[in-house]
Length: 282
Ligand code: C2E
Ligand code: MG
Ligand code: MG
Ligand code: MG
Image (cartoon, rainbow, N blue to C red; front, side, top):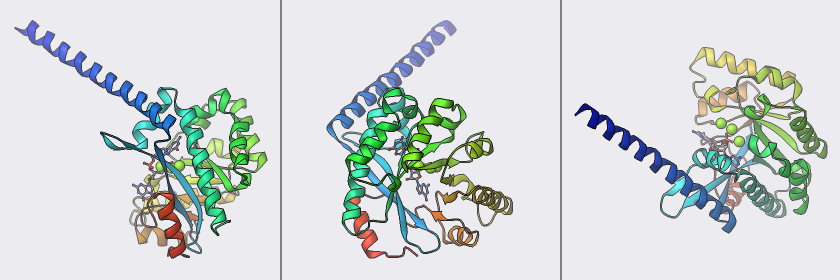
C-alpha cells in the first residue's frame, strides 16, 4: 500500500513537472511568434524632475497581451526570453519601438525628452548585439545618442570582464547615458560604483517603501544619495507611491522620481495627452 502511494506520488510529481515544462516551452514559442509579428507593446513611464515636476525622461517597458492568458508580466517572460534565446531579438524590438516613439515625441514639440531602455545582462554578453548594434538602431532613427539611456542591473556588473566594460564604454563615448537599475538589490554595489562610467543610479523600490516613517531606512537612503552625488551621478528613485515619500525625496535633493503616484506606464498616445495636460506633474 505504502509502495503504491509512493509510486502514485512519484507519477503525480513527474506529471506536474512535465506540465510546467510544456507550458514553459509553449510560452517561449508563443513569445517568439509575438516578437516576429510585432505583437508586443511598449509602454512608457515618466521620470519626473523633482525640482520642477517636469517630465524629463521616459522608461520603455515591454508589455505582452497574450491571446488566451491575458496580460503576462515582463517579470515572468523576460527570464523565459533569456532562457529561450529570445532576449536579443526582444531587446532589439523594444529599442527600435522606443526610438520610433521618441522621434514622434521630439517632433510633436517635446525635443528635450530622453528615453531609458532596459538591457538584459545576457543581451549584453552576446557577441552579435554589441554596442555598435545599439548605436546603429539609434542612428537609424536620426536621434542624438545622448537622448538614450541604457539601464543595466547589478547582475551584469558582478561578472563583468574587460569585454563588457569595453562595450559599455563604447556606448558611453558615443554619448549614450548609462543607468544602474535596481541599485542596492545586488551584492557588489559600492565596489563597481567606482569603476563604472554611470550617469544615473536608480535606487530600488525596496529602499523607498518605508520612508519617511522608518528612521533607519531614511538614514540608509540619505547615505546612498550622498554617495551617488559625491561620485557625480544623478539619483532616480523607483516606486514612489505616496506624497510623503515624494516630499522626503525632494527635501533630500534626490534628482528624479518614478512611480505610480506620478504616472503609471502607459501607451504612447496616452502619454502625449498626459504631457500636454501636465506641464508640471506636481
Ligand atoms: P524595472 O526596469 O526596474 O522597471 C520598473 C518596474 O517597476 C516596472 O515594472 C514598473 O511598472 C514598476 N513600477 C513603476 N512604478 C512603480 C510603483 O510606484 N510601484 C510599484 N509597485 N511598481 C512600480 P514592469 O513593467 O512590470 O517591469 C518589470 C521588470 O521587467 C523591469 O524592472 C525590467 O527589469 C524588466 N523589463 C521590462 N521591460 C523590459 C525590456 O524591454 N527589456 C528588458 N531586458 N527588461 C525589461
Ligand atoms: Mg528599468
Ligand atoms: Mg528598476
Ligand atoms: Mg526595480
